[in-house]
Image (cartoon, rainbow, N blue to C red; front, side, top):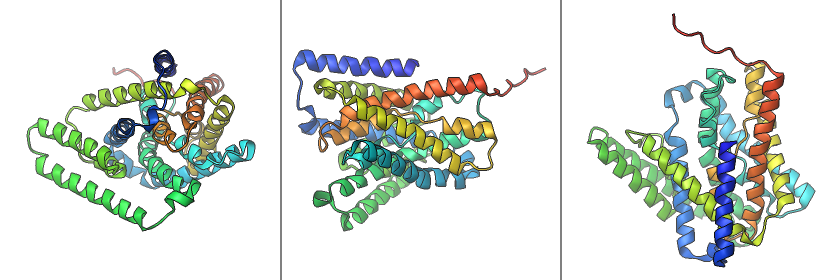
Length: 338
């Protein structure tokens, strides 16, 4: 609940600042576009940086299904519900924007004893890997929503090739500096994030997060938290024109239901309580906020829908998990050492 309150406060401050200062049309400035890309690069690098590669390999099949089939299944379900109920032509891109699980929110519940160690590993990797997948899918979904301007073409293959080249260069840099003084790792990580934002090679920087790592991840955690705060404030600035509450609530409810469907399909064989908690794990945070900022320029009113959707998802998460805790058994706490 504290995180939800923090989000509401920052969005509210942004709205107040825009209202009092008469700020309009911010999304059409070049600086805004670069800033939103930088914030997204920070969030993506942070999401993959924290993945435990050894543990992720143990459940690689389920994780791969979750971030490919699972993301597509969730996006299709959400888009179908939103389009059938509201008829909004942006349903597909709205769906992809909220289809991911926020890794920062997941990290805050990892110390909880509700999930088994296996389920924690799966959820942590799921939430980290589906961020870059949904971001790439979101940008490609634009071509489906607006085929006249951004149709699928060879340029997408070129884009994937450039992202692969970016990741390869980052890997080469890591090989060169891995035994160098720690400051070199911080400089290399910062350079990767800034250059990815400048060139829009976001998949590349997400991949780089798997190996180009900071010696002390607390600095990255602070940077991601700052990026989230700034993103929420910017979202508030863009909400000065009002929010589309009805469509936003519909989108949020559909996103939460989609996670339940994906978990039911993909977690066969896990204990029942783990399947339940994975099904109730949908939370939205920094990636959904920044995607809203990124697409407001091309889809006016995008933030007005995403903002109430994020609030809906996170409130339903709290309510659903409290009900689950009240009705279901909790795992016993580990015995203290003798």
